[in-house]
Image (cartoon, rainbow over all chains, first blue to last red):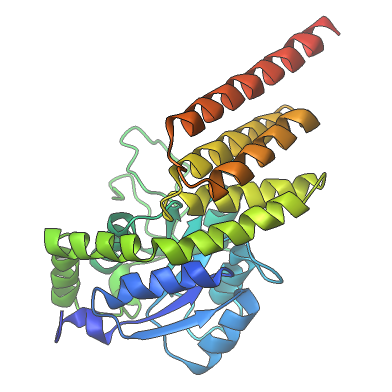
Amino acid sequence: MPGSALERLSVLIVEDNQHMRSLLRSLLNSIGIREIYEAGHGSAALTVLADKRCDLVLSDLSMKPMDGIDFTREIRQSPKSANPFMPIVMITGHTERHRVEAARDAGVTEFLAKPITAQSLYARIAQIMENPRAFVRCASYFGPDRRRKAQEDYAGPWRRSDDTQDVHVR
Amino acid sequence: MKKADFIAPDAYPQPVSRSDAAKISRALKSSDVLERGARVIQQSSSILRMGVLDYVRELEQAGSNPALVFDKAHEIRGFAETAGLRATGRIADGLCRYLEEAAKRNLTADAAVVALHVSAIVRAAHAKDEASRMSDVVAKELSALAAHKLAEAKTGAAAN
């Protein structure tokens, strides 16, 4: 897609398996993304981010020495973070509830369950670009708003500064 | 109690403008882009197989280390189908489900169930006819065995 907005995007792939990194790179190349950086784990990715501007991160969950959850926490909370609002897609074969919740509470933007398909990857990128998430900052959390659906019958407590009983969250 | 701050999307920098975002979204949903992506995965399958075989080797070497078996089984489950190793992925999925369920019930995973799954994963990943009917039968039998062992443990716990 020459000349498209996708060509201007830069993406960081954080994945410990070089074959999966290579696949993700090829999938991004095929939609016109050329500026792609790679890191094998969370701390290497932080080094890349200190030096390069990235618009989107695709990160594995399970990596050593720094996994995707700690990496996400660093991006969201570290005073050194270049962009605490960075969209982060967590790609994982681990679907246990406690892991998914830990990643969500660290501030992950979207999940992508393995096995990945081109359609599932592109759908997450489209979602992030077209419907960016609102962020929430409080004493115990900073990251994308974790409320995904409006609860029409929710009666409070109203804990966010813009909360009114008329607010509906998409 | 202090309320949390809500930061709307237009209050922080976005990577692309709204109109570009809409164009990107449309492009990424188009059938030719999806077909091209599917072809990329297909063309990468032989390289991906090497990645799966790395994990299979590590699974074999994990022996009786439950955390390592758990981790490698999940990696294989997440990877195998994309690499075109459907049966390997299915057996790994069965092992993951069994280990997750055992952990949820605070049970020690049955060593024989784990060993049989690992052996079947190794054989399937190296088989020339990976997606054969026999692989499906093996996956089904192992799944039944895992379910039986979990039910047995439940009955045992109830009797105690």
